[in-house]
Length: 633
View (cartoon, rainbow, N blue to C red):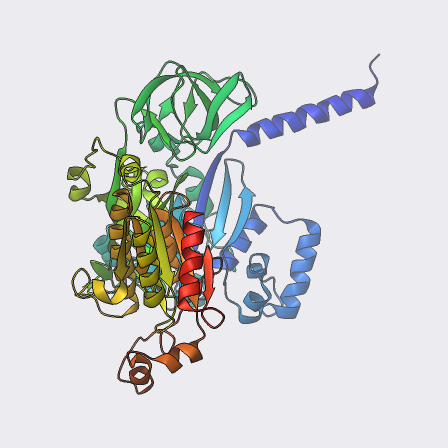
C-alpha cells in the first residue's frame, strides 16, 4: 500500500508543476503610469499590487507602519509607499526615479513602470516608456488635463505606444460626478486627435479607494466598464503584429563554444524564421540559408519575434556582432544619413556637430547631429526655430554616422528604429532618438573605389602616413614647433603638409566664428582634410588649439589605428599669457574678444597624449627633434 505522505508529496509536486506551466504560458504586458505631479500614479500601482495579492505579510506590516509614520492618508494605508522607494520620494510625496514592479493575475503577467511627473524628470519617463506596450495616463479629476498630461501623452505616442488608457483618478474627491469625467474625457480627446492618438480607453477610478480598479464600482453606476484590470488583461499585445513583419535579428554574440560549432545569437526583432529559410546578412549583403535554430532546451522548428535563439548558417559567411540577419527577399535599409526625432536627456545642451556614440540594437557607431530643423513645443505642438536642444527638448534633426548602419523607421520597427546617443567622454546617455527615414543624398552618394590605394601612394613616397595633431593654448608654441618639425622632415626628403589654425580660417573655414559649435565644425572640417591628405600618403601636421577632447577623439577615429599622434604643447596659462604674441589675451581680458580659450572658454587638456612637450623645460628646437625622432622611430 502506498504511503499517504508520498501521495501527498506527489500531488503537491504535480500542483507546483501545473502552476508553473500555466504561469509560464501567460502573456506579459509591459505598461507605464504617467501624468502630472501628484496625480496618484504610485498609489494606483500600490493598489494593483495589493489587490492582486502580490504583497507578503511582512511587507504589509511594514507598509502599515510606514503609512502611520510618513504616509499622506491620515493613518490609512498609503499604497504609494510600496513604489516610492527613495527617501527623497517619501519625504516629498513624489516620484523621482523609474520604479518597476511585477504582478500577475489569473490571465496575464505584468511589469509596470511608475514614471515621474515633474518636467525635470521627463527623461526618466522616456526610459520607462521605451519598452512599454501600454500607457496609463492619469489625470486628477479636480485638475483636469494639465501640461504634463499633454507632454507624457505626446511622448508615449512618439515612442510608439499604441494603447492608451486615460485614468481619471481621485473620483472620490469630486463625488464620483459623471459630468466631471465627461468634461475631462472630451478635453483629452480634442488634444489626443491633434497628436495622432485616434483611440484611447477612458476609465473613472480612485486608486486610494479602489473604485473600478479590479471590478466595477457601485459608486459609478453610470460607467459600464471595463475595469482597469479587465482592460489590462484583455488588451492585444503587439507581439502578434511583430510576428507578421519580415524577419530581422540583430546579432548580439557570435557563439563559438568549440571548433565544430559557430552560431549567431540574438533576439528576433520581428518576423519568423525556420531552417531552410533564405536570409541576408547586413550590411554586407551576403546571402545564405538557416541551418539550425539552437536553444538550451534543444533545436526549434521555428522561432518568432521576441524569442532569443542561436542561428547556424549553411555557409561560412562573414557575420559578427552588430550585423543583422534578415529575410533575403525583404531586407531592411542600410544608410549613414537620417532624419530623426531626438529627445534630449542631458543637463548640458546638445552641441551641433559634436561626435557622440550612437547605439541602435547591437550596432555602435560614431555619429554627429546637426542643428535641429525645428523644436517641438509639446504644449502647443508648434514647430519652433532652434539652434540646439536643452534638457527635455524634443526636435527633428539630421544624423550622420561614420559608417552605414542597418535600420528601419521607428514606426515600423522599434528595435531597428530606436537609438540612444552617448557622450564619448563621460559615457552618459544624452539623448534618445527615433529614426524616420534615410536622407536621399545618402542613397544617391556612393564611395567610388580607385585602383590606387593609400598604401601604394605611401610606398611611392617611401614613408608611412601620419597625422601629427598639435594641441595647446594660444601662445603655447604650437605653430613654432610644428613649423620646425616640417622643416626637419623636408630636409629628410619626407613628404609633409602643415595645416595651421589661423591659415585655414582664411579660406576653408572663413565662414566660422569661435562659438563652441563653430569650433567643433572647424575641427571636423580640418579632420576630413587631414584624412584625405593621409590617404595621399602624406605626413600631415596640424596646429590648432582644438580645446575639446571629444573633437580630437573624433579626428582620431577617422584614421587607421596608430596614424593619429596627439602632441600636447603643455604651456601654463600664465606663461602663454605672458608671451601673448598676437595680443589676444589682452583683448580677451578687456572683454573685447569673446569665447577665448583659457579666459572665458574652457580648454580640456589631453589625458594620454602620444607626446607631451613641456615648453618650460625644453626649447622649440629640442621639442621638434623629439617629435621627429618619435615619428620616425
